[in-house]
Every structure is written in C-alpha cells, then in structure tokens.
Length: 604
Ligand SMILES: [Zn+2]
Ligand SMILES: [Zn+2]
Ligand SMILES: [Zn+2]
Ligand SMILES: [Zn+2]
Image 1 (tube, helix red, strand yellow):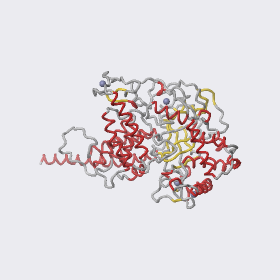
Image 2 (image 1 turned 90 degrees about the horizontal axis):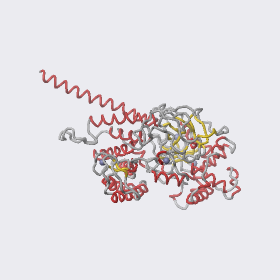
Image 3 (image 1 turned 30 degrees about the vertical axis):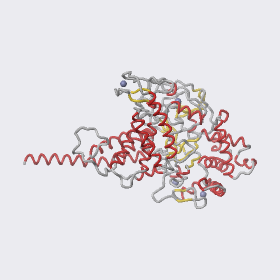
Image 4 (image 1 turned 135 degrees about the vertical axis):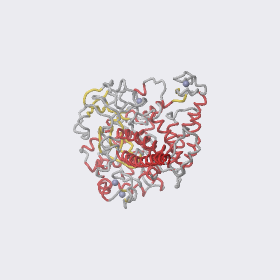
C-alpha cells in the first residue's frame, strides 16, 4: 500500500488560520449553549459509547417555533427552528433520527481555503488536486482549480475577487503577506456574493440573519475585529464610507457587525478525512447550538457520484440516535480538551459559559484529566490540580503522592504542546524534537493516553512522524508510527462516543498503517511464544489490520453517513478490507497447504 496519500494529506498541515487548528471538529454556530444536556439515562461521549440506545425525552427548555420567513430551505421537514431558553434559536428534531443519518446536507454559502492549501486543493469544489494537477488562475496566480469546469463555476465571484487579490498583492509590504488571510478572503467573498446575488436574495438574508455577539464581545475581540475591518476595506479597495453602500453596508458600524457575525459563525472546512483546510460559512448549520457532548457532527464526506459543482457538500450528521423533540447540538470547540480549556475557548470566541451535562456533572474521573493508579491496580485517578492535590484511585483508593511532579509535568507539557504546535509547519524538525522528548515525560508522570495534554501531544507527534517519513520506509519508522497512532486511537476511544468521525478516522489511519507492507519483518522465530509484541508481524499483523478496519468501517458509516458508505474515507477503508481479505485468504491457504503437506508426509 502506498503511503503517498496519507503523507500528502499531512504534509503541509495547518498554517496559521483563522480557525483553531487543534479543533478539527470545530463547528461554530450562532448561539449560546443549550443548557443542560438533553439526554438522561444515557451516558454521552465519556461512556463506552452506546449509539444505539433509546434516548429519553429532553430536559432543556425548547420554546415556541420560530418563523424562518422562507429562509433555510435546506432544512428537511423533520427539523424545525425553535427558540431555546437562554440559547437563542436552535434546531429541533420532529422525528426520531438514527445514528448515521444525515440531518442537513448543503453547500456552504462561502468556502475559502487556508493560504497553505491554496495550491493543493481546488478553490471551487475544495477537492484535493487530481492526478493531473491543479490549474492556476493566470491573472491573480493565487487560486487553483481542478479544471476549467471548476474555474467557470467560481468565475462569477472570483472575477471581482481576482482583482481584489491582485490589488492586495501590489500593495503588500513583503512577499510573505502578499496573499490576504483566509478570514479577509472569506469576508470579501461574503460581500462580493451579496452584491452579485442581490441584497434581497435569500442568500443575503440568511447571511444577515446570523446572530452576533457584538454586545458581549471581549476587548481583545473588538481590537481584532477593528483590524479586520481595516484589512477588508483595503482588500476591496474601498476609499471612503460611501463606497460601502453597494455592499449593503450603511456605516462602519455595519461592517463591524458583519465581522462579528462572521467571527461567531465560521466553520472549519475539512478534507474528507478531517484535515482542516480552510473556513466556511453556512447559516443553516450554524443554527445548531453547542454542546461538549454533541449528538451531531459536521463532516465533508465527498462522494464520487456527486457532480463537482455541488461540492463541497457540508453534512450535519446524527452521531447517535436523536429522539423526537430533542435539540440537535454540535461541538464548537475541541471536546477532547478538559473543561477549563473548553470553557476558555468558548468564552473567548463565543462569549458564553457552557452548561452542558459534561460541563456541569460531577464525574469521578474525567478521562481528559486522568492518570493511572500509583499502585497500577488498573484503576485511574483524577489528575491533581492546584486547588485539589489530594486525589485517589477510584478503584483501590490509593492516594496520589506525586502531586507536585504531576502538576509540573502538566504545566511543562502544555507549554511544550503550544510551542510544538506553533513550529509544526515552519520548523517540523524542532517540533518533532519537542514531542519526542515530551511524550516520555508525560507518560512517566502516569497520565492516561486520553489525558490532556498527552493526547494532543500524541496526535501532533503522529502527524510529524508521518510528515517526516523517510522515502525508503524502515520497519522501525513504520512500527513507531503504528504505536503512536494506536495510543492516540486508544486515548480518543475513552473520550469520544462510538461513531464520532474523529474516532473513525483515527481507527482508519491505524488500520491502513497496519496494512502497509512490512519493509523488513523482524525474525519472530526467536521470540518467546505468546509474548505480546506491538505491532505484531506477518499474518497476525494483517489480521489486526483487518479487524481494525472492520471496526473503522462500522464507525465511519455513522460519522460520515450510512448512505454514502462513510464517504471517500469509508470507500478507501472498504477497498483495503477487500485487499486484506485476499491476502489473508492467501495466508489461510498457505497454512492449509502446509498442514496437508505435513499430513501427506506422515502418511508416506
Ligand atoms: Zn474542483
Ligand atoms: Zn484569479
Ligand atoms: Zn459543555
Ligand atoms: Zn488503584
């Protein structure tokens, strides 16, 4: 199996984007938290993840239906916009929805690639470069397309965008800022499209109906929005306030409103395997409120049967069964983060305090902040905090005596994670040096694989290992990546529920890595029998790959939709499964042949 695809998907990774690169699943919406979690009797993501159980009726306050004035036509008849207490508008299901069903599938109003990905993904359909390569716009020389078809589809808006990009480049003080940021290009496209479609179009009305948090904005946000307004004006070549009128803006205040709506309604645009490649605006999906224990997730599965002009099709998936009259909630922030960090992120960007069940319930141990029992009884303990450094194993009650050392490790680990993340693109070797040194420190502090910052560090390390693969793959390098991917996948599985797209993708990556041909399988003859060695070699490895991919397929059809068979990533997994079935078949035959040979030898 070729590594090229895995590698190219990671190679350029995230540059500085408007969106938090750690939160591939960010799904910013318009509103505040939905209040307490809707589900009683069923554990959310922190449980072993029952996605098929029967949800009971919701306990939050859903008020009256909101008139949508002919907007949000992409909402199917089984969804409804209603007022939710303390949370503005929200999406409510009228009928029961099964895990793996698509709640909404729609093309976002605006999609924009991050600057790093402009030359590796199509700016129209947002698909990865075809084998024949992408074609560059010969005028601005900044955006690239699959072919003339994608270019023509984009031309009505790119026509003006192209001029704006050239204008920006001509006044850029240095080459490294010659391309406007994704945020500025996205805002530019909103205004240009509004002008193109008309201010009375449904498209424009849906943009203007998105809610903002302008009144409760943090001072830091005010500053950044003002900065953005200046850049946007320069980008569009607006010389004085009167020139804002054709864009439907009557004053500078209108412009700040637009930026505020943009800031709280931006989604991460991801590849079919969840690599964050840009940002997008989708008013209908933005109606979904936030929960740290979401029942829905956003993906871009892509389909080989869909015309390119309809891509990227954004899907809001039910990741567990949703009862009638239950609110549909997605996560705006990375839910693998512990509570304080989630709350901080939500406060900074969306100005609200989350009161979901995960944020309010008392948990014996949150796997996001957990360590192994000091006596290694198999139980886990909460990690100590500054306020509470007396923690005990929940199984055998042994006290953690190394509280200071653990606190140090957590602090140093977070600093190292921030540093390594910031170096990931520009100086990957330095970043890898940091993760390589830090993981053993966190592990020896007894943190579980799901504990922050070990989980995030493991993920970053895995990405760096894949990006840095030697051209001639060695057994050691491959096994090292497999072990890291397995640790990451194990950490995720104690946090995210079965069927969560992030979990499915991690399993698919692990399975695919296990299925890579071993460059030089170690001699296993000398190994003691039954000795657990990970990853195994030979037929045992293929079998593990096969089982992992079967599990991945099961989860991907939930996270990426049963109808499309789990999207492109589901298709890749199915193809590898078929290949492995053949290879495993060959092995079985060989074993059978060997047994028969032995029998024949005995007889003769
Ligand atoms: Zn395209
Ligand atoms: Zn152009
Ligand atoms: Zn929460
Ligand atoms: Zn214990």
